[in-house]
Length: 234
Length: 258
Image 1 (cartoon, each protein chain N blue to C red):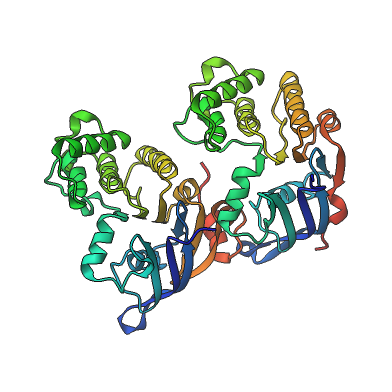
Image 2 (image 1 turned 180 degrees about the vertical axis):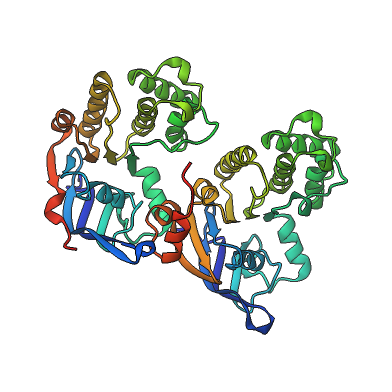
């Protein structure tokens, strides 16, 4: 039986307290609830500062909400990303939940091709197949072949973002979180990324995305979720 | 899930006069997990590391390690020879100053081979081959094998210390400021190497440092210490990107962006 949802957000609330600024409290959102099923792409909408990124980062457990639950379907059970132990969260990130950020956190000295192939290798795919798939994806994203053997530290923003995208799409995740996946890309590469997202979704991945680019948003979204409705009172 | 490798329960260390070293520290460390402990000088992180690595007996609380023979065993209930054997085999300690972890008058190959001999290896050819293999893994050129560590640069000494420890295939490694005192470029290379080794060998490690960049790169989870107490703990990127405790916020905001 296919599950009807793989990600369940329930009554999620988040307020930042800035102790270094005299304890200022910045409420972001309160009582957010939604679910995402396989093959759905939910795009978070709302103006800058409405809490989309905070919500997306909370889903990945990069931020810790104050209240509520984020249940991710993982290995036949559910893991609450708000309360799970670090090693459980890392297991979810390793096997179940991928995250494409706007920026690549560069690992010094590691060549681009290895950066992209690494998620496959850590999953147990053989060296040759992992490299072949990494190459196919880098070629599809039009990253010049002469850059493949170079660590991405010195790349331009758009090149780094394509490495980041290649790394996340080289394997499939049941749940994928995308934070402005096309922000610094040109038109041709945007279309490639839209195609990659659509393919993943049609293969059953549940996607939550932030995307300010209207044409891209219209192309990938199966549903919009307006974060401003959950703005917390200060 | 599996059993912890190291189970730490309410460990407190008081120094004479009642001065607090560390207070009521508890955590479980699992195989393959890397725990970072950060805090400023005097926060108790070194005291805690000294207790965990059996150099100093805590005033209260227990530290149990999953020994090959008897499962989770209180490390202070072991006899002195048993504890020494543990230190030579299942544990490795990377000292901040490589001089504390190396024999400076013995060749690089000898430093690595010695650990193998301590656990019973006797065949010279095998010992040399394995020592060479480890020296290559830590990027020490083959033609430096017969040189003494006193003629090595600081970064190379640190890499040699790591080879000396890893050759006996420990299950748990303690690191005290592993990149302290090294140039930034040398630090990056060492960190990168450590990161690769920790991942490929599935090592569990406890890394004590004041350098947040070190824990971000190496540690799965983090404990922040202040005045002997653990003030915040959790997933490394969560603690660094969304710190909750006033002290952690101060610590994170004090880092210069480069």
